[in-house]
Length: 325
Ligand SMILES: Cc1cc2nc3c(=O)[nH]c(=O)nc-3n(C[C@H](O)[C@H](O)[C@H](O)COP(=O)(O)OP(=O)(O)OC[C@H]3O[C@@H](n4cnc5c(N)ncnc54)[C@H](O)[C@@H]3O)c2cc1C
Image 1: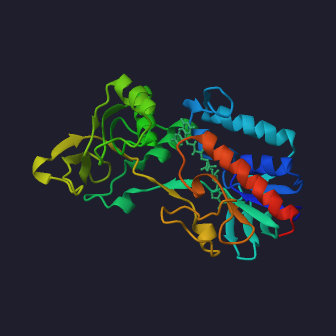
Image 2 (image 1 turned 90 degrees about the vertical axis):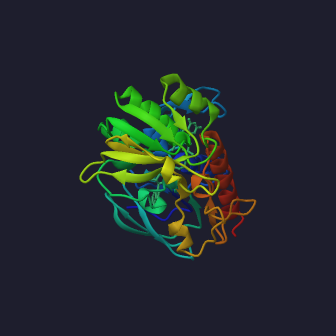
Image 3 (image 1 turned 45 degrees about the vertical axis):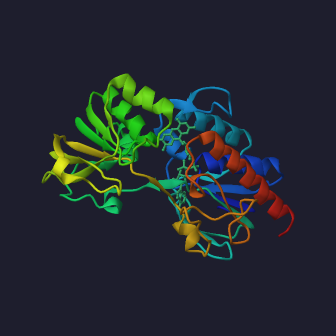
Protein backbone atom coordinates (compact mmCIF):
# COMPACT_ATOMS: atom_id res chain seq x y z
CA UNK A 1 0.00 0.00 0.00
CA UNK A 2 1.26 3.51 -0.86
CA UNK A 3 1.67 5.73 2.21
CA UNK A 4 1.60 9.51 2.18
CA UNK A 5 5.02 10.87 1.15
CA UNK A 6 6.42 14.09 2.60
CA UNK A 7 7.48 15.12 -0.91
CA UNK A 8 5.60 14.10 -4.02
CA UNK A 9 7.13 14.61 -7.46
CA UNK A 10 4.89 14.66 -10.52
CA UNK A 11 6.88 13.38 -13.51
CA UNK A 12 9.94 11.12 -13.58
CA UNK A 13 11.93 12.79 -16.38
CA UNK A 14 15.32 14.40 -15.87
CA UNK A 15 13.84 17.25 -13.81
CA UNK A 16 11.86 14.95 -11.50
CA UNK A 17 14.72 12.52 -10.89
CA UNK A 18 17.19 15.34 -10.14
CA UNK A 19 14.68 16.91 -7.73
CA UNK A 20 14.17 13.61 -5.92
CA UNK A 21 17.91 12.96 -5.49
CA UNK A 22 18.61 16.43 -4.22
CA UNK A 23 15.66 16.41 -1.78
CA UNK A 24 17.00 13.12 -0.38
CA UNK A 25 20.47 14.67 -0.02
CA UNK A 26 18.83 17.61 1.78
CA UNK A 27 17.31 15.30 4.40
CA UNK A 28 13.91 14.19 3.07
CA UNK A 29 13.43 10.43 3.45
CA UNK A 30 9.85 10.12 2.37
CA UNK A 31 9.72 10.84 -1.36
CA UNK A 32 7.50 9.42 -4.10
CA UNK A 33 7.63 10.03 -7.85
CA UNK A 34 4.48 9.43 -9.89
CA UNK A 35 5.08 8.87 -13.62
CA UNK A 36 2.56 8.32 -16.44
CA UNK A 37 4.91 6.37 -18.71
CA UNK A 38 6.01 2.76 -18.14
CA UNK A 39 9.61 4.00 -17.64
CA UNK A 40 11.57 6.81 -15.98
CA UNK A 41 13.50 9.36 -18.05
CA UNK A 42 10.73 11.20 -19.92
CA UNK A 43 11.67 12.46 -23.36
CA UNK A 44 15.28 11.27 -22.91
CA UNK A 45 14.24 7.66 -23.58
CA UNK A 46 13.35 8.44 -27.20
CA UNK A 47 16.42 10.64 -27.86
CA UNK A 48 18.87 7.95 -28.94
CA UNK A 49 21.30 10.47 -30.45
CA UNK A 50 24.30 11.75 -28.48
CA UNK A 51 24.62 15.30 -27.10
CA UNK A 52 23.50 14.78 -23.51
CA UNK A 53 25.45 15.33 -20.32
CA UNK A 54 28.53 17.28 -21.43
CA UNK A 55 28.17 19.63 -18.44
CA UNK A 56 26.82 17.17 -15.86
CA UNK A 57 29.07 14.18 -16.56
CA UNK A 58 31.73 15.67 -18.88
CA UNK A 59 30.74 12.99 -21.41
CA UNK A 60 28.75 12.92 -24.64
CA UNK A 61 25.93 10.50 -23.78
CA UNK A 62 22.73 9.41 -25.52
CA UNK A 63 19.41 10.31 -23.88
CA UNK A 64 18.80 6.77 -22.52
CA UNK A 65 22.38 6.65 -21.15
CA UNK A 66 21.86 9.98 -19.38
CA UNK A 67 18.50 8.83 -17.96
CA UNK A 68 20.11 5.50 -16.94
CA UNK A 69 22.77 7.27 -14.86
CA UNK A 70 20.07 9.12 -12.91
CA UNK A 71 17.98 5.99 -12.56
CA UNK A 72 21.01 4.15 -11.11
CA UNK A 73 21.48 6.95 -8.55
CA UNK A 74 17.77 6.70 -7.69
CA UNK A 75 18.06 2.93 -7.17
CA UNK A 76 21.15 3.45 -5.01
CA UNK A 77 19.23 5.92 -2.83
CA UNK A 78 16.19 3.60 -2.88
CA UNK A 79 13.88 6.43 -3.92
CA UNK A 80 10.44 4.95 -4.65
CA UNK A 81 8.49 5.66 -7.82
CA UNK A 82 5.28 4.42 -9.38
CA UNK A 83 5.19 3.99 -13.17
CA UNK A 84 1.98 3.89 -15.26
CA UNK A 85 0.55 6.34 -12.73
CA UNK A 86 -0.79 9.59 -14.17
CA UNK A 87 -1.67 12.33 -11.71
CA UNK A 88 -5.23 13.32 -12.53
CA UNK A 89 -5.80 16.31 -10.31
CA UNK A 90 -4.10 18.50 -7.73
CA UNK A 91 -6.14 20.54 -5.28
CA UNK A 92 -5.00 23.90 -3.86
CA UNK A 93 -4.33 22.27 -0.43
CA UNK A 94 -1.80 19.94 -2.21
CA UNK A 95 -4.08 16.89 -2.23
CA UNK A 96 -2.97 14.71 -5.16
CA UNK A 97 -5.35 12.39 -7.02
CA UNK A 98 -3.79 9.75 -9.26
CA UNK A 99 -4.58 6.42 -10.83
CA UNK A 100 -2.00 3.65 -10.73
CA UNK A 101 -2.03 0.43 -12.76
CA UNK A 102 -0.81 -1.53 -9.73
CA UNK A 103 -2.14 0.48 -6.76
CA UNK A 104 -5.49 1.67 -8.12
CA UNK A 105 -6.93 5.05 -7.19
CA UNK A 106 -4.65 7.15 -4.98
CA UNK A 107 -5.40 10.16 -2.80
CA UNK A 108 -2.20 11.54 -1.28
CA UNK A 109 -1.49 14.45 1.04
CA UNK A 110 2.20 15.43 0.73
CA UNK A 111 3.71 18.42 2.54
CA UNK A 112 5.22 19.68 -0.72
CA UNK A 113 5.00 18.85 -4.43
CA UNK A 114 7.52 19.31 -7.25
CA UNK A 115 5.90 19.80 -10.66
CA UNK A 116 8.15 18.17 -13.30
CA UNK A 117 5.71 17.31 -16.09
CA UNK A 118 7.83 18.59 -19.01
CA UNK A 119 6.20 19.93 -22.17
CA UNK A 120 4.21 18.79 -25.19
CA UNK A 121 4.43 19.59 -28.90
CA UNK A 122 2.23 22.01 -30.80
CA UNK A 123 0.14 20.02 -33.28
CA UNK A 124 -1.30 20.69 -36.77
CA UNK A 125 -4.53 21.92 -35.17
CA UNK A 126 -2.79 24.68 -33.26
CA UNK A 127 -1.15 26.18 -36.36
CA UNK A 128 -4.16 25.81 -38.69
CA UNK A 129 -2.50 24.82 -41.98
CA UNK A 130 -5.05 24.95 -44.81
CA UNK A 131 -5.93 21.74 -46.69
CA UNK A 132 -7.01 18.23 -45.80
CA UNK A 133 -6.18 16.19 -42.68
CA UNK A 134 -4.99 12.85 -44.05
CA UNK A 135 -2.80 10.28 -42.28
CA UNK A 136 0.90 11.14 -42.45
CA UNK A 137 0.81 14.48 -40.64
CA UNK A 138 2.77 13.88 -37.44
CA UNK A 139 4.58 15.90 -34.83
CA UNK A 140 8.33 15.27 -34.85
CA UNK A 141 8.33 13.93 -31.29
CA UNK A 142 5.60 11.42 -32.13
CA UNK A 143 7.62 10.23 -35.13
CA UNK A 144 10.69 9.97 -32.87
CA UNK A 145 8.76 7.81 -30.43
CA UNK A 146 7.37 5.58 -33.23
CA UNK A 147 10.83 4.97 -34.68
CA UNK A 148 13.06 4.86 -31.59
CA UNK A 149 10.79 3.22 -29.04
CA UNK A 150 8.02 1.39 -30.92
CA UNK A 151 9.98 0.29 -33.99
CA UNK A 152 7.70 1.68 -36.73
CA UNK A 153 8.55 3.59 -39.92
CA UNK A 154 7.18 7.13 -39.94
CA UNK A 155 7.26 7.74 -43.73
CA UNK A 156 9.30 7.49 -46.94
CA UNK A 157 9.12 10.87 -48.70
CA UNK A 158 9.16 13.49 -45.99
CA UNK A 159 8.83 17.26 -45.65
CA UNK A 160 9.58 18.76 -42.23
CA UNK A 161 8.12 22.07 -41.11
CA UNK A 162 10.13 23.75 -38.35
CA UNK A 163 13.88 23.76 -37.81
CA UNK A 164 14.07 23.61 -34.02
CA UNK A 165 16.28 20.88 -32.61
CA UNK A 166 13.62 18.17 -32.74
CA UNK A 167 12.93 18.85 -36.44
CA UNK A 168 16.65 18.81 -37.26
CA UNK A 169 17.33 15.63 -35.31
CA UNK A 170 14.38 13.88 -36.95
CA UNK A 171 15.61 14.90 -40.43
CA UNK A 172 18.80 12.94 -39.74
CA UNK A 173 17.02 10.06 -38.00
CA UNK A 174 14.57 9.54 -40.87
CA UNK A 175 17.41 9.68 -43.40
CA UNK A 176 19.32 7.02 -41.46
CA UNK A 177 16.14 4.91 -41.48
CA UNK A 178 16.07 5.07 -45.30
CA UNK A 179 13.53 7.86 -45.81
CA UNK A 180 14.09 10.70 -48.26
CA UNK A 181 13.80 14.02 -46.41
CA UNK A 182 13.08 16.46 -49.21
CA UNK A 183 13.57 19.63 -47.18
CA UNK A 184 13.15 21.32 -43.84
CA UNK A 185 11.02 24.47 -44.20
CA UNK A 186 11.36 27.21 -41.57
CA UNK A 187 8.94 30.12 -41.21
CA UNK A 188 11.51 32.43 -39.65
CA UNK A 189 14.60 33.87 -41.42
CA UNK A 190 16.82 31.86 -39.03
CA UNK A 191 16.73 28.33 -37.63
CA UNK A 192 15.81 27.98 -33.96
CA UNK A 193 18.06 24.91 -33.60
CA UNK A 194 21.59 24.58 -32.23
CA UNK A 195 24.32 25.21 -34.84
CA UNK A 196 25.78 21.75 -34.19
CA UNK A 197 22.43 20.23 -35.16
CA UNK A 198 22.16 22.27 -38.39
CA UNK A 199 25.61 21.02 -39.41
CA UNK A 200 25.37 17.41 -38.20
CA UNK A 201 21.72 16.75 -39.09
CA UNK A 202 21.16 18.73 -42.33
CA UNK A 203 24.42 19.82 -43.96
CA UNK A 204 26.13 16.45 -43.47
CA UNK A 205 23.20 14.77 -45.27
CA UNK A 206 22.61 17.44 -47.96
CA UNK A 207 19.12 18.16 -46.69
CA UNK A 208 18.02 21.65 -47.84
CA UNK A 209 16.95 24.17 -45.17
CA UNK A 210 14.44 26.60 -46.69
CA UNK A 211 14.27 29.72 -44.51
CA UNK A 212 11.30 32.15 -44.55
CA UNK A 213 9.18 29.35 -46.03
CA UNK A 214 6.03 27.65 -44.81
CA UNK A 215 3.53 24.93 -45.71
CA UNK A 216 0.65 26.78 -47.35
CA UNK A 217 -1.52 23.69 -47.96
CA UNK A 218 -1.64 19.97 -47.18
CA UNK A 219 -2.86 17.66 -49.98
CA UNK A 220 -4.19 14.09 -49.87
CA UNK A 221 -7.34 12.18 -48.96
CA UNK A 222 -6.41 9.11 -46.97
CA UNK A 223 -2.63 9.66 -46.83
CA UNK A 224 -0.66 12.84 -47.50
CA UNK A 225 0.22 13.08 -51.22
CA UNK A 226 2.06 16.40 -51.10
CA UNK A 227 2.30 19.88 -49.65
CA UNK A 228 2.35 23.36 -51.14
CA UNK A 229 5.36 25.33 -49.92
CA UNK A 230 5.47 29.12 -50.13
CA UNK A 231 7.92 31.85 -49.14
CA UNK A 232 6.56 34.29 -46.53
CA UNK A 233 6.50 38.09 -46.51
CA UNK A 234 7.69 40.34 -43.65
CA UNK A 235 4.40 39.64 -41.81
CA UNK A 236 5.05 35.88 -42.11
CA UNK A 237 2.12 35.51 -44.55
CA UNK A 238 2.63 32.99 -47.40
CA UNK A 239 3.21 34.58 -50.84
CA UNK A 240 0.96 32.21 -52.78
CA UNK A 241 1.95 33.49 -56.23
CA UNK A 242 5.43 32.13 -55.54
CA UNK A 243 4.31 28.79 -54.07
CA UNK A 244 5.25 25.34 -55.39
CA UNK A 245 4.13 21.76 -54.93
CA UNK A 246 6.25 19.05 -53.31
CA UNK A 247 5.10 15.43 -53.50
CA UNK A 248 5.53 13.57 -50.17
CA UNK A 249 3.76 10.97 -48.04
CA UNK A 250 4.63 12.50 -44.67
CA UNK A 251 4.65 15.96 -43.16
CA UNK A 252 6.49 16.26 -39.85
CA UNK A 253 5.70 19.25 -37.70
CA UNK A 254 8.29 20.65 -35.35
CA UNK A 255 6.60 23.92 -34.60
CA UNK A 256 7.12 24.50 -30.93
CA UNK A 257 6.79 23.08 -27.46
CA UNK A 258 4.29 24.07 -24.81
CA UNK A 259 4.91 23.55 -21.06
CA UNK A 260 2.54 20.94 -19.58
CA UNK A 261 1.01 23.21 -16.93
CA UNK A 262 -2.73 22.36 -16.96
CA UNK A 263 -2.66 20.16 -13.85
CA UNK A 264 -1.18 23.01 -11.82
CA UNK A 265 -3.06 25.94 -13.37
CA UNK A 266 -6.30 24.07 -12.62
CA UNK A 267 -5.20 24.06 -8.96
CA UNK A 268 -4.76 27.84 -9.18
CA UNK A 269 -1.01 28.15 -9.90
CA UNK A 270 -0.15 31.25 -11.93
CA UNK A 271 1.26 30.86 -15.43
CA UNK A 272 4.05 33.03 -16.91
CA UNK A 273 3.43 34.99 -20.07
CA UNK A 274 5.68 32.60 -22.01
CA UNK A 275 3.25 29.87 -20.87
CA UNK A 276 5.42 28.08 -18.26
CA UNK A 277 4.63 27.80 -14.55
CA UNK A 278 5.38 31.07 -12.77
CA UNK A 279 7.97 30.46 -10.02
CA UNK A 280 9.83 32.72 -7.58
CA UNK A 281 13.60 32.73 -6.95
CA UNK A 282 13.18 29.54 -4.88
CA UNK A 283 11.26 27.88 -7.72
CA UNK A 284 8.01 27.96 -5.71
CA UNK A 285 4.81 28.62 -7.65
CA UNK A 286 2.04 30.94 -6.46
CA UNK A 287 0.69 27.94 -4.45
CA UNK A 288 2.73 27.56 -1.22
CA UNK A 289 4.50 24.19 -1.19
CA UNK A 290 4.18 23.63 -4.95
CA UNK A 291 7.57 23.92 -6.70
CA UNK A 292 8.37 23.67 -10.42
CA UNK A 293 11.39 22.67 -12.52
CA UNK A 294 12.39 21.66 -16.04
CA UNK A 295 10.33 22.15 -19.16
CA UNK A 296 7.08 22.77 -17.28
CA UNK A 297 8.65 26.07 -16.14
CA UNK A 298 10.53 26.92 -19.36
CA UNK A 299 11.41 24.83 -22.40
CA UNK A 300 15.15 24.06 -22.12
CA UNK A 301 17.55 23.15 -24.97
CA UNK A 302 20.00 21.31 -22.75
CA UNK A 303 19.23 18.58 -20.29
CA UNK A 304 22.09 19.64 -17.99
CA UNK A 305 20.19 22.84 -17.20
CA UNK A 306 17.02 20.87 -16.54
CA UNK A 307 18.86 18.62 -14.09
CA UNK A 308 20.41 21.64 -12.36
CA UNK A 309 17.01 23.29 -11.97
CA UNK A 310 15.58 19.99 -10.71
CA UNK A 311 18.33 19.84 -8.06
CA UNK A 312 17.48 23.34 -6.90
CA UNK A 313 13.74 22.63 -6.78
CA UNK A 314 14.39 19.47 -4.72
CA UNK A 315 16.57 21.40 -2.29
CA UNK A 316 14.09 24.27 -1.89
CA UNK A 317 11.19 21.83 -1.44
CA UNK A 318 13.22 20.06 1.29
CA UNK A 319 13.92 23.38 3.03
CA UNK A 320 10.20 24.16 2.87
CA UNK A 321 9.27 20.83 4.45
CA UNK A 322 12.01 20.94 7.10
CA UNK A 323 11.21 24.55 7.93
CA UNK A 324 7.67 23.39 8.64
CA UNK A 325 6.23 25.97 6.26
C1 LIG B 1 14.07 15.71 -29.59
C2 LIG B 1 14.81 16.32 -28.47
C3 LIG B 1 16.17 16.40 -28.58
C4 LIG B 1 16.92 16.93 -27.52
N1 LIG B 1 18.28 16.93 -27.65
C5 LIG B 1 19.04 17.32 -26.61
C6 LIG B 1 20.46 17.20 -26.66
O1 LIG B 1 21.04 16.77 -27.67
N2 LIG B 1 21.16 17.58 -25.57
C7 LIG B 1 20.55 18.05 -24.46
O2 LIG B 1 21.23 18.36 -23.47
N3 LIG B 1 19.20 18.19 -24.39
C8 LIG B 1 18.42 17.83 -25.43
N4 LIG B 1 17.05 17.93 -25.33
C9 LIG B 1 16.42 18.62 -24.18
C10 LIG B 1 16.23 17.78 -22.90
O3 LIG B 1 16.30 16.43 -23.22
C11 LIG B 1 14.88 18.07 -22.27
O4 LIG B 1 14.72 19.46 -22.12
C12 LIG B 1 14.74 17.40 -20.87
O5 LIG B 1 15.02 16.02 -20.94
C13 LIG B 1 13.33 17.66 -20.33
O6 LIG B 1 13.20 17.11 -19.04
P1 LIG B 1 11.86 17.29 -18.16
O7 LIG B 1 12.03 16.39 -17.00
O8 LIG B 1 11.59 18.72 -17.93
O9 LIG B 1 10.68 16.79 -19.09
P2 LIG B 1 10.32 15.34 -19.66
O10 LIG B 1 11.52 14.57 -20.04
O11 LIG B 1 9.29 15.57 -20.71
O12 LIG B 1 9.65 14.61 -18.40
C14 LIG B 1 8.36 14.90 -17.93
C15 LIG B 1 7.76 13.63 -17.41
O13 LIG B 1 6.53 13.93 -16.75
C16 LIG B 1 5.60 12.91 -17.02
N5 LIG B 1 4.25 13.44 -16.81
C17 LIG B 1 3.62 14.42 -17.49
N6 LIG B 1 2.38 14.62 -17.02
C18 LIG B 1 2.22 13.75 -15.98
C19 LIG B 1 1.15 13.48 -15.09
N7 LIG B 1 -0.02 14.14 -15.14
N8 LIG B 1 1.32 12.52 -14.14
C20 LIG B 1 2.51 11.83 -14.05
N9 LIG B 1 3.55 12.04 -14.90
C21 LIG B 1 3.42 13.00 -15.84
C22 LIG B 1 5.89 12.56 -18.47
O14 LIG B 1 5.38 11.26 -18.79
C23 LIG B 1 7.41 12.63 -18.51
O15 LIG B 1 8.02 11.39 -18.23
C24 LIG B 1 16.27 17.41 -26.36
C25 LIG B 1 14.87 17.36 -26.26
C26 LIG B 1 14.16 16.81 -27.30
C27 LIG B 1 12.65 16.75 -27.16
